[in-house]
Image 1: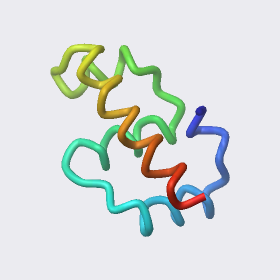
Image 2: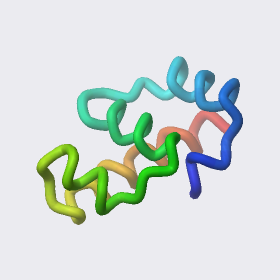
Image 3: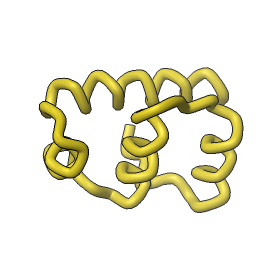
Length: 66
């Protein structure tokens, strides 16, 4: 799922309804800007695998509200 493909109103809807917690919020925001997972990992001082795990949780929450 490419989060940056969603419209701003859709992103706002997800932000309000997906109950993102902790780093999920930040990963969601950065992915919404089209930033690659590798750059997100660098910015958050995490491994790429750690960011991928959080990204999968974000995707699962988005799918639940669709």
